[in-house]
Length: 323
Image (tube, rainbow, N blue to C red; front, side):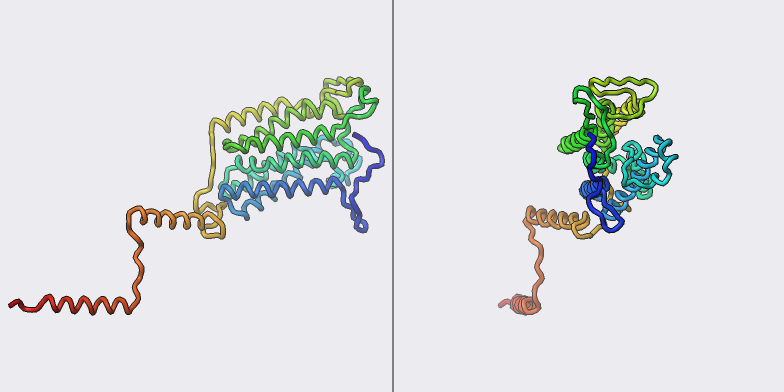
C-alpha cells in the first residue's frame, strides 16, 4: 500500500516532530511491559526485577533490530551513514529484534538465576502487538511496499496490512494457548514458528523486496520469490519446531522459591509473604476448630484474684478435722 502525500508526522513541537511510526512503537513497548509484568507477578517475581528485565529486553531488541537491518542493507547506509541511528524513519528487523531481545534478557536473567524460557513466553503479547502496530506505522513512512499486481489494476499489494494481520493472529493464538497451562518456552517457540511460516509464505511473497539466487516475479498476481527472509525461513522454522518439542518434553513450570533474589519480598504488601502468613493463620484456626479446642483467652487481673481467693477458702474447708 502506497499513499502519496501521506504525512508521517502526528505533530511538531518546534523543530521536533513526532512520527506515527514512533508513536505506534511506543504504544507497543507500553503494552509489552504491561503484559510482561502482570504475568511475572503471577509467578511470584518482584516488580523491580520484571521492570528492569523488560527494559533490558526492549533496549537490546531495538539495537538488534536496527543492527541487522543495517547489515542487510549496506548499500543505502554507506551512502547515507547518518541514517543509521534514525530508527524513527523506520527500518527495524523483527529477526534482529528477537535475537537481540533474547540475548539481553538471558544475560540479565542469568544474574538472578531466573530461567529465560518463561520470560520469553511473557514477552509474546508485546511483540505481537508491536508487529501489528508498527506495520501500520510503515504505511505512514511509505515503506514495506507490496508488488504491483495487474489483478489490482496495477496497484501495489497492501503488504503492511498483511503483516499487521499476522501480528493480530499471533496475539489471538497466544491468548488461546494461555487458556491452559503450557510448559515454559512453549508459547514463545509457537510464536516463532507460526510467525516465521506466515512471514515467509504470505508477507514476503507479496512484498517488493530484492530477490536472491532464485528470481521469480509474477506481474499478473504481484508475487515474487526468493527474498532473503524466505531463504532463512526453513532453517528458523526447523529450529523453532525442535525447541517446541524440547519444551514439551522437559515440561518445566518454574516458580521462584522463597528467598530467591528475583522473588517478591516476604511480607511485602500484596506479596507472597503476606498471603502465606494469612493462609497459615487460617489453617491453624481451622485445625483448632476441628479439634474442639478454642484458643485460650487471657484473663484480667480481678478475675484471677477472685478465683484464687475462692480456691483458697475451699481448700481450708476441705482440711477441717472430722468428728
